[in-house]
Amino acid sequence: MMRISLINSNVLGILAAVGAAVSFSIIDVTFKFLSQGYPLYQMVFIRSVVALSLLFVIIIPLEGGYKILRTQNIRLHLMRSLAVLFANISFFSGLAVLPLAEAIAISFATPLIVTLLSVLFLKERVGPWRWGAVMVGFSGILVIVKPGLDAFQPYALLPFFGSCGYATLHILTRRAGGSDKAATLSFYPTFAFLVISALAGVVFGHGGWATGTPVLDVVLKPWAWPEGIEWAIFAVAGVSGAIGGYLVGQAYRMCEAGLVAPFEYVAMPLAVVWGVLVFAEWPEPSVWLGSALIIGAGLVSLWRETRTPGPPPRPRPRSSG
Picture (cartoon, rainbow, N blue to C red):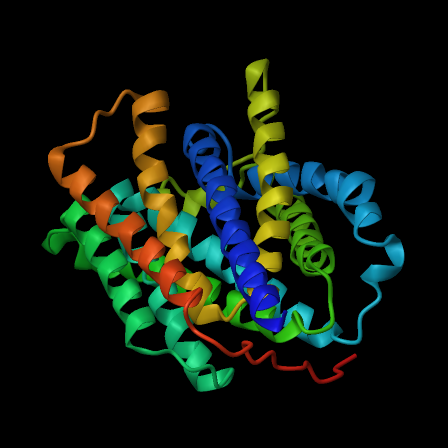
């Protein structure tokens, strides 16, 4: 019975990770579409309003009611919020000055960093199969984007710093997942997004800080009111943010971080799909090969997990608030 329960838990966690990857890929598409006309803080603010509304009206009541927002790990959630804020600012600033494919390729260092940090800080055992899955998945990313020397210019450090921030978020999520529900894990970073983006809007919304430098004006350009269909696009980003935040919290609280990490590579083949459907960018043969490597790595990791006995160690969080 324990064996069946473990397999079901891991499979559900992996499915949650895939669902989160789908949700976050939708956010990437919407933000890419909107970024030419709107500052990052505005996109984050509107997304956070929609996401929090969905959390309060649907997700939190289904998970046990508003009492689940009470936590003994306030300090841990503050650290998670700071990590994801740092990650978003770093990644989207780099995206403004780097080619999209190169920025995404660098950002996919996240699963490698997660796997390493899970060994160092969570004391998880990551065997050769999981290391192999991560490395094969990453090789698929390189096959797809074929990064050249330009990817290693100084601005390339920005999406790498973003990767470090996201990896830290996932490790802290795993740390908090022993006692807090997924809706709780999703609420605190989303609320932090709302507060920080609102403050940024007050400070930068008038546009007086704009410099004409793309990497800075991602944050500094003025607030602009959406029109027509753009409101719907903002709403889609908000709903995707709520669902993705919930699912990624569920994934990292149910499974070892080293198991979940390779499934984040699913976002890359999804980017291919969005490129065809939204931007009419038909992929080259190398993209199909890379996508096969990414998907194959995830399937091998899943197959191996269903054959490995023993429940995953779940670190219990210390009280910090």
